[in-house]
Image (cartoon, rainbow, N blue to C red; front, side, top):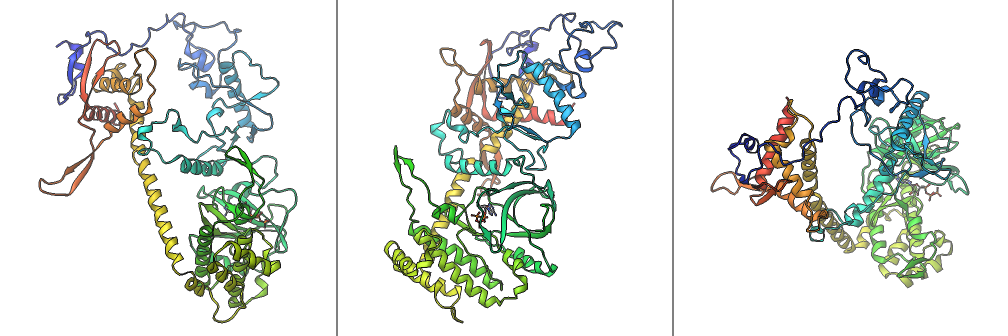
Length: 618
Ligand SMILES: Nc1ncnc2c1ncn2[C@@H]1O[C@H](COP(=O)(O)OP(=O)(O)OP(=O)(O)O)[C@@H](O)[C@H]1O
């Protein structure tokens, strides 16, 4: 066997079948292109440092005249520029952005550094000035693919706000691997919903609102409602809800600010402590409360869990909506809430109220504008605790407040059934509307809730009236959990595939390892390289690239194939191994002069051994 062949089969245990060997001196993978004559190549010291101290002391590379325009703006940052490492220049699509959209919130030094970078980008990426029609171009060459993550997370830079591009929520739709559609990737609708939530959480603050930069450890404030125009009052006060990031845990919270509220006694916060201990799936958790002068007034701020893209019940069901196109025709939006949905809401809210009453508290605000729809049919009571602080001095009786809760709940049921916040202003009409569109059971529940308060009227009684509808709700919830578990299953393998792709990235085309420039093309790595070609670089009979995600996923999954080995011969306990499939494939060298037959299992061990070599280092 020729010496060159040995490198391809360096692992003695390899079961790879060699069909024909490539000529010893010609590795099949492409050779690195022959280097330019050194006297024509520009000296890297010029590129990196702007000058070469060996220029007149025998440095063999080309040194341009000192007055020639430098090819790279020199700065310490430019040491890793594309030119400095002789890498091909990445030319992104230039996205025109209006001067107002892209903002820079950086310190002067950061700005000058950024300007350097920008000049470098302009020099390298836009050698000919694009005809921008008077528009400026995004400073960030990667803005094309970047969302605005500024300030949303301690791990993301807070210095820049980039122009946002709409997300492609369905990355997998072109080309959609039909055969794998139900096996891999969660459904489009769920992915889109979750992506939108994540996008909302990560979107940066809106410039020009003159909001405080920092507020008791919260930063990046974004109002969740219009700050101008007509405003409704929260009791006697104006209030605004903001989204903000906590600098300690990096989590986004909702901050409700009550404007111009002067706290007279610190003990008014006692209720907040009780509320912060209540955790319920239908109550938006209260985190903390504080007063602040950061808004140039005396403001009270109560911090809640943030549920991105949630809507109030009012916004979701009562607010009049204009007609929309459906099936090609302009149609008025149906306003009536289905009875099943209403029961689900009633049960969830009743459940939340029961938890609060059992904890010796009263909700104090049960209103269509203060209950949020945070997911499909999922409602949560918001703004808890705030009324306790605002009316601390009134010393109201809890039993009385709990009766008030039931009455407010009744009003809410009427408002939802009649799609009218003020339905209770005309009770006979409201009862008639409810009776016309909904069942007698729902009417009984609504009438019970608005009935006269009494010692025997409590939230527990409501559950006696709801009866078997509770079971229906439970069935639906369990079905929803099953559906979500099914969706999770479809994503299960994806993390393994990403890990595998990362290993490919570490191994393939590695310029040098252990002082061996051909490390990535020889030994086990040669099989890895050929497999990479097999997976990604196949061409059809016309020489066109085969861009088939199904093929890629099938191959990668066979490498990640799970094996279940019995621990003992007669045992039914199994050891789960990420072992690769025994199926064999033929890998063909690029020059088509040789091919190898290997199993996925072997490819996997080649990848693993190459990767562990890398992790061990030289
Ligand atoms: N905890 C939260 N998580 C996510 N969004 C929230 C949260 N709390 C409130 N919001 C959102 O903030 C916005 C404003 O809330 P708010 O309670 O002020 O509603 P509103 O309809 O403006 O009522 P009002 O007219 O009484 O101010 C709503 O769109 C709501 O969805």
